[in-house]
Image (cartoon, rainbow, N blue to C red; front, side):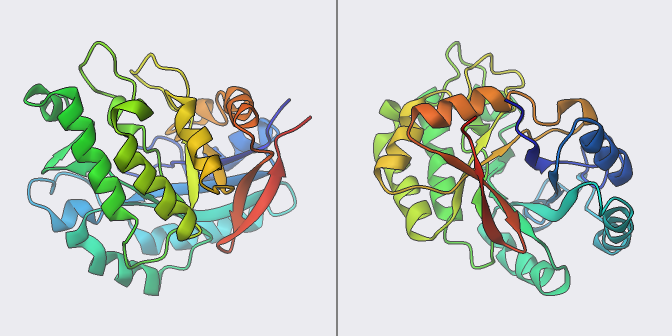
Length: 272
C-alpha cells in the first residue's frame, strides 16, 4: 500500500537541505503524495549555544513568501503544510517563542540534536562516552525538551542518537533505558503530543525504530498520536520505507497515523 503523505522533509531553506520548495513539492506530486509537510530546520539552538555559528540560519521572511507562492501554485494537487523543526536547547526557548509570534505554521517538530555541547551527528560525542552514557544523556535531554514553553506538535526522531553512533550495536533499545523512555512516553501522552516514527536510517544499519518495544509501550501508556516522516533532505527520499513503518505500527496496535493541518491532527488509516 502506498502512503501518500510525508510529515518530515527539508528544502534548501534548511542549512543541509538540497531541493527548492518548488522542486520538493513537484517531486511529492510526481510520487503521488497528497500531503507534504516541509519542516525546515529552525536552529536557534545553534544561536544560543557556543560553537555553532557556522550553521546557516533559516531566512524566515523569504521562506514565508516563497512558501505562499508554491502553496498557491499547487493548491489543487497537494496539501502543503508549512512546518518547522526546532532544535531544542533550553537556552533557545525565548528565541523560539519569538519565532512563534512572527511566523505562523501548520506543524512543528521538536527535536534534540545538540547534547552536552556537541551535535550527536558527529562522532566526537561518542568517542569519549560509553553507549549507555551517550544514549542516556541524550534521552534525558529529550525528556527535558517536552517541557519547552513554545508550541510544538510532535516529538521528533528519538532514535536520532543512533544515526552516527560508533558502537557495534547502534540500536536504541527500550530495555537499556526503560525508566527514562517511560517518562518520555508518559509525558508525550499527557501533553497530547505525537511521537514521530522517523524512517531515516542513514548510517545506522538498524531496523526502523530499532526496537518496537518502544512503540508497544507508547501504545500501552495510552499513546495514539503517531506521525511518519522520512526526514529527507532530497526529493528522492520522500516517503521512503513508509510501508515498513506502517507494518510496525499495525503490529504494535496502531490503526492510524496523523498529519497536521493548522496544528490539528488528522487521522490517516494505516490499513489497506
